[in-house]
Image 1 (cartoon, chains in turn purple, blue):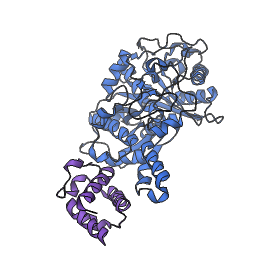
Image 2 (tube, one colour):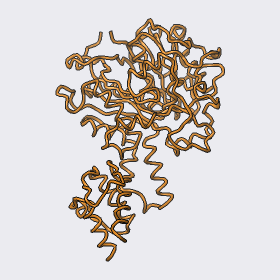
Image 3 (cartoon, rainbow over the protein chains, first blue to last red):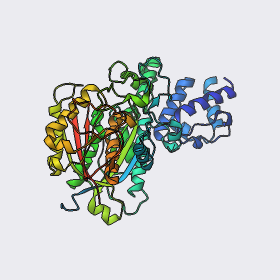
Image 4 (spheres, rainbow over the protein chains, first blue to last red):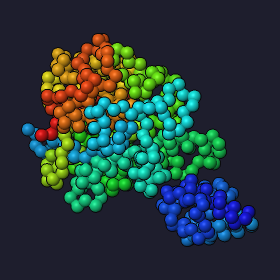
Amino acid sequence: MHRPEILQRLTRVIADSTTAPPDAAGVTEATSLESFGVDSLILIDLIFDIEQEFGVKLAAEELTAMRVMGELVSHLETRLAG
Amino acid sequence: MKNDERRVAVTGLGLVTALGHSEPEVWSSLLAGRCPLRALKNHDYAGNKVCSGGEIDLAEFEARVPATLRRADRTVRFAVEAARQAMTAARCLPAEADKPEDIATIFGSGCGPTETLHASHTRFAEKGPAGMRPSSVPNGMANAVSAALSIEFRLTGANYTVVSACTSATNAIGIGFRMVREGHAAAVLCGGTDNSFDPFYYALWNNLGVFSPIADPQRAVRPFAADRAGTLLGEGAGALVLESFASARRRGVRIRGEIVGYGESSDATHLTGPSATGQAAAIRAALRSADVAPHEIGYISAHGTGTDANDLTEAQAIRIALGDAADSAPVGATKSYFGHTLGASGAIETIGTLLALEHGVAPGNLNLEHPDPACPVSLVGAAPQPLTRGLALKNSFGFGGGNAVLVLRRYS
């Protein structure tokens, strides 16, 4: 799966899971994950939704260590390639 | 006069209704006889026999809700916005220096988080148990309402949700009244909320046969009229802050009225069929609690759903409980303005009653061109009517046989 498609699908998942829905057209790999307003309960749902969407496992500590969308895209790109 | 530590003052009011999203807006609309009931348009209701009611203007409402609550169920969001108004007026927001300690949160909801339960059901149908989000339980539990309020306003007293159909909010206010009067809480945030127009929840009502088939929504709900044909639903929330008179005076907050009595009972007969005997028992219990005689009551805010059986039974109950004093206590019903807001109705209509007492005038009964001669009560007419006495009853009766009645007094 190519990075633009991963970014597009991630944006849709995040819009459905978080308190600050991103404007799909405005989300880039440089967009801060913090800007989505994720608290601990939403984080659990977000991880669940990402796992459902991409079929890969994601640990909470892995996601919370990331700062921008590009890092999450890279993480998923690697897992999907593996 | 009772000790001011035991007299229960209402110091905060908040409303989210089809008639308006603030107390002044709602009151001016009630006095003007403005009916907001309309064809439903927030979702697709195709397939329902009746598609009208007291629907919130969602665009205007959602603009008021903080982004942090976007994931909360709409039932919760209604409650938080109504509570924000009440807590602001009562100066009980977290930043207030002199707010009462350990404020309790006792809120009613007849349906609970309908939006979340609907979404969970859809996911279950599509994906089975494996598709259920981890937050399905905390967001979908009935007490998500009081939990969210407690967290939002940092309220550290008792925190639970009362679930008793259409008496939920009146029960919650009654419990809050007792907590303050008996010294169990310094203050209570109470009220009720319901999101009746989630498409799945609304469809549950489709074949129950209680909706008015009258095509014009503004003419459809006709409480106590000979030509009444049923009710329409509404949605929203009402919130009140209760505290002792001593606390309100010490803090210098405005007192909007007094709760002086609360009574409750159960019909113990039928899930949906009302009982005049059971309802009269709750009215009598409320009068005893208030130490008030029937002839002192100057206004009755009825449950008044506009269905044939409910209005007749309620009128009989009032006559049983008040006797001849019912002749001088005009009955008003405001579900023709708000729709039947279910578990929120007791709070929204209690606030309406407090405002009627405060202003000394009862809103007119919409669509009451032909009062039903079989209903043995005195009715407010189509126009607003001056109130000469400062005590009122607020009746709420619900599926399951629960009956709850508050006695309210004008503050002067």
